Amino acid sequence: MDRISLVPPELYGNIGYTNSIIERIPLSIELTTNDGLELNDQSGDGYKIDLGDVINIDRVTDLFLDSFISYKTRAMGTGSETYILGVKEFDIKTLSNSSPLKNKILIPNTSEGSDKSTLHRASKFNYIGTITPKKIKELTITLTDNSDPPRTIGNNIASKVWINFILIPREK
Image (cartoon, rainbow, N blue to C red; front, side, top):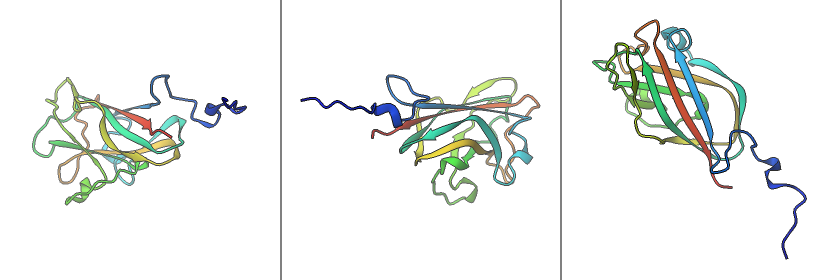
């Protein structure tokens, strides 16, 4: 005999940011020279971004970097071979023999500079880590190059960066 439940199973689940094929939470971030790419934005904990909505992560969730696109950023060269991305709320755990790389995401810089857009992460779904249940309203981001001392990656008053993350909750 089939059981009849008076409580719909989705009643307590995350009802936002899902589709019928697979649950996922897309998260797109834009940083510009005026909002997040200046060196003084990178001091302290980093640049705070208000998401405008609360992301409710209600179970263990895998985090992926979907794409990283830049426009008018520093060309690849000495001290600019990689970008170093940190997101405090994602609790990224990486080990390194270099302290600026600890608990950060390393992204290769393939930019030729000038007025071109560059897709730095051409492969999709780069696994970053796992997030435990929590609510996220804002992100604290640091983004520098690998020079010593670190510089902002912006090269122009019109520099921009777009970062796309995908959060995929694990099966219950």
